[in-house]
Length: 89
Image (cartoon, rainbow, N blue to C red):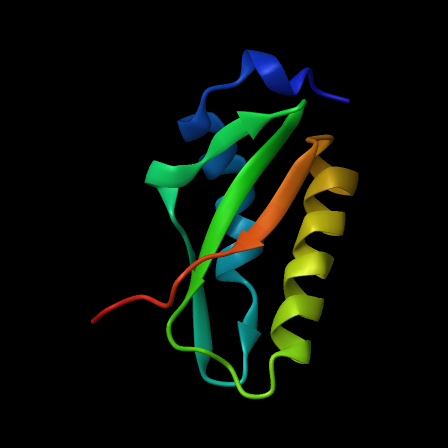
C-alpha cells in the first residue's frame, strides 16, 4: 500500500483519473473536480462530477463505489469517491 499522505492532490488525481474516464452511466460522463481533492483522516476525498444528474441515482452511486474499490485495490490508495455537483457546460 502506498503511503497516501506523501502524495500531492495532483498525483492522486493522475492515479485516479483513468478509473473515472473509463466509467460511464448510460450517456453520463464523469470528471474529477481536481481543485477539491483533499486528504482527510488518512483518506483522499475525491469529488467526481457527472455531466448531469442521473435518473435513477442508484447506478450512479454504485459506479462510484466500484471506482473506489478498484482504486484502493489496484493503486493501494485510501480514497473516498464523493459525488459533486453536475458539470455546467
